[in-house]
Image (cartoon, rainbow, N blue to C red):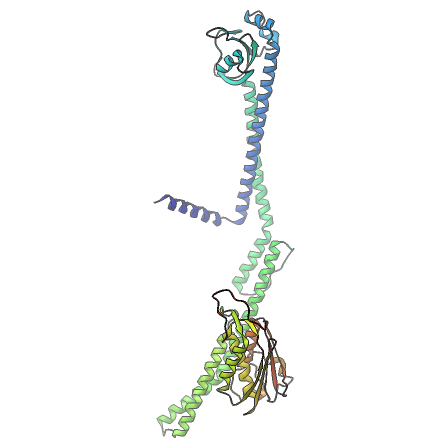
Length: 479
């Protein structure tokens, strides 16, 4: 197994372990780690500062003593061992006189004859290469702090003091800091757990409410308390619940209406097929009657096909992603008029001005075609449908009976059919599809009385009278 695979597996294992923990435990763990890191840094900095200050103070004290004692008379007396160390206020230190004027260098250690760790730094101070030196040496299994100052004439005065007392003090300080650090981490863990437990209580309530909704399928809003992030999350969830509830209501209504509307053509279709079967099994039908029944069956199949297509269009709360592009509305209108003219016995009085919109050309053509079909259906044979497109507003008006005041508020409702239209073909979904398409394009549509006294529909879409500037390579939709 390669190193990359090993690292990937380790990272995956850590990620899985991390996200298997609860949010409260993660908050507690992260709080403890953060406080532990901060305590460690502070303790280390404090320990290093105290240690440096203590050693510095000791060096300053030893250097001051050595400088005061480094006079010629004192040096001679020390060389002859005539002055005891306590007379110089140095009973707690060792005093060594290094004489580098001879080869090899000599030293006089008061109280003992061993070398006591004298080395190159002290010899250099005696030669005058350095004014003084300070270092830590080991002697008889013990740490000593040694300071040397130049005493003139190739000599150096060295004072050494044991660090046993200082080390004990620093060890106690380190132990105290360690204990306080552990106590601080434990306290931080408890505090993090308490904060996580209390701070996440609204999240637990929200989770319980969501789980109850998922279990019972009751889309009831969640109670909201306060105005914090959890309250905003609950508000957004309530908005989603309202949208879902409205979608469910629309779907239920659509299914109920579709079942009602499909029942009639299915019953008629079954009846006609039964008649054909019975007639063929007995005496048979005349060619004329048989042709009429087949034409009726064909018409009912076409009606059902149209109805199912309309239902599929309306069943999409979020329509499939269309091809959104600049569309020349006059070209779309011309193509829709040409299509309706082939199947309707009406004339069209058309007046247009250029208008460009951004949207789905196929959907816009379907909406305009539905308006034109509706106008052609209500116009008398040989009648005229008035079509104008001015400044982005398309008007389609017929010269039929018009829309009654009681039907006007419902003309765009699904499956709504006025009393006069019950005997006509259609599913009652055409105008509802028009409104859905127009609203998806950011436009508005309204119905009323047209200039000729018949029904009039006004469709307004946002756009501009000139073609927009397009990036290189993008094609404008003209049909």
